[in-house]
Image (tube, rainbow, N blue to C red; front, top):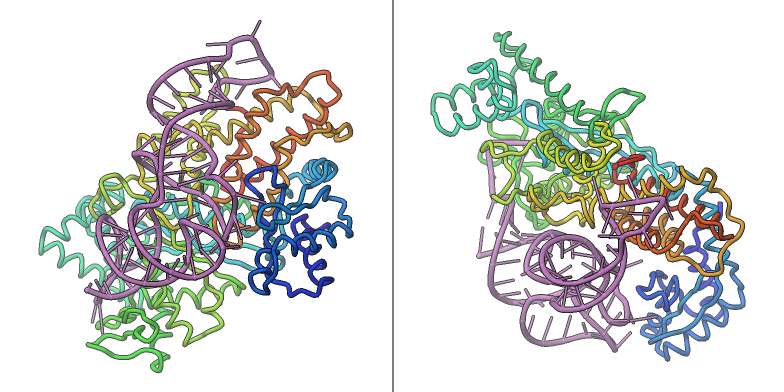
Length: 565
RNA sequence: GCCCCUGUAGCUUAAUGGAUAAAGUAGCGGUCUUCGGAACCGCUGAUCCGGGUUCGACUCCUGGCAGGGGCACCA
């Protein structure tokens, strides 16, 4: 397989530097904002002039002379501009060849080999049984699914994992609520139990008792209260079924296994594991006020409790256990964990402790924290009952899509409506960088115009519609002289995918697709694609290449491309 | 008080130390003789405040200010 053009250009720069007897710094290429500055630009001359002295422009001229001698077929022109930038202009043939390549590659278009042969496990979503699947989980799911797909596109074998809190006070609250009010849903039972826990001493006492009971039954001591355990299993199974339905809807679903995730981990297991591991490593942990703690002070971290004074594992010990559990069940090269950023500090402590127990395992763990999805009123919380469930959000947005669609004659299939609604929601989550919060304004956040999921889907369906009308679109013979702007974007797709995967940042893909769709829409507005000019077949091929790129890109965001909308 | 994250047009967000800071939305003005108007074109509008490093800073360092998160037996 031919190397990506960006690699070829880098190579040619390196050879030029070598011939000139210069040292070779890290070379990176950028796409200049202004097309007058070429398709790629390099600042090596500026970098070298800085480290070794000399005039950057003169240096650039020398480098260019060597590059020109190499006669790269894809490069039409190389020149020096500005302070000493080397600008590369790609040839007409390169762009046409790329269109051909897209059509040949189809669903494979955009893949890279960065992680070829690697095994990667991605953990995300992590909803807790007995509680509602809220929009925070939706956010984690959207991000995790996209990252999983990006990693798959980079050549790795990906396993999806979800880690769920099936023990702890929240479970006891739900169980207590359900026992008092057998007819309400689990989510509601939890909300009510949580409220009473704060309000009434008696309730608090009973809930703590239930918590202990569950723990003891799980830790092998058994329990006399058979009905409580039955209710517990029932609730867990019920949650599982509910979650699976949502995963299917969201597109996190493996047809082969018939489940959303390849691996499910539970705190009840990771807790047992973690407790044992902590106890086996007294050289790492220490006793303090009756608890077992890890002192992170040396590394500028907090001291955190791993086993509480009752000997029960906390979040930290469970996370340690989880790391070993994952490695045992599916040894991988990279374990990615997607979580909210409120636990970054804890995660650092966990990793610091793990490093001393098993440095190799700790090395393989990558924590990707994301911002929070907040409501205008404040933090998302299921404790106060002030929550928006994923289900209700999808329903609400679907309703609006339906209204919008009823203005049209065709296509009111539920499937399409949901694809658009979920596309809108996912896009609003994935269009921005991982770090910052999203303020979720019910009215504005999910728009159908401009910078939105439906905008991307719409551009794709337009292209699809033209292709349906035209029949064949595989003729890349009569190439027009002028390079069309879309061509200058299309070839960049694999680079974008690779970068997004490398940095675990799906928003690079989202931003790129938006630019691409906008360019297509502009072109579409002023250019007739199906006409009787000799260029028409090429324009059709270009339309098909655009459509393929949109489909692959949207797939990477976990968004479906409807045929009509 | 200490630690971490974030401050970019009115609002929501882009920008790999690089060339004139890019979009969407809101506002104003256009395109309606269509291969699909959820579209297209134009105008208005921004790097929180000081200092520093650099040929070059939204980006790196430093001091403030503002917002969020975290600071031992919850997750």
